[in-house]
Image (cartoon, rainbow, N blue to C red; front, side, top):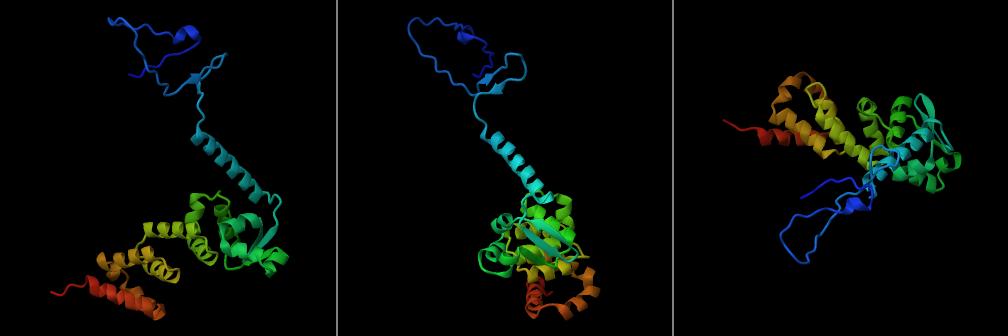
Length: 241
């Protein structure tokens, strides 16, 4: 049985035991948790260290520091030129997040000498979202808004976890309005799960009829191997009467 008992002094450690047994016996006591009450009152706290709580507090503190580093450009040492503005960042954070960035600053490339990176295929807003992901401060609504741009950046700079997150997100809301675009993105960035999801939506669920007006234009622009794969998918699901 488990009993909770407030222990204020040594006398509180004594429990009366009702037993008809005479002689010596041993009681094994196990403290599942032992808490200390403050002298002036208040909530009791455990004497055992809480690694989970400590790690959570440390993680929150680290994220606050990283957020300040990014927002206030504290000791920033690299400038990023986007399509419509500039940002300040830190070589160490970029290098730890991306082997491509790490290579830029490790070898004698122009980025190492000038401390300047050109990411002109991203807007200032989408690149800011990319940095917020790398610094661990990204907001869900910003991720959803810029996930296609983030996918391109994740592929370009070899940020595998971001690429996986974008693919997972794009799988969640496939519909007739975006399925062909998603299929093209999946082929371009070699996203097998997204590609399978789009093909399943089109052929297994029969939604190809909902986009028949867009298909002709899609076929004029699609890669030949992608068209072959789509044809093979048709043969897989087609069952002659």
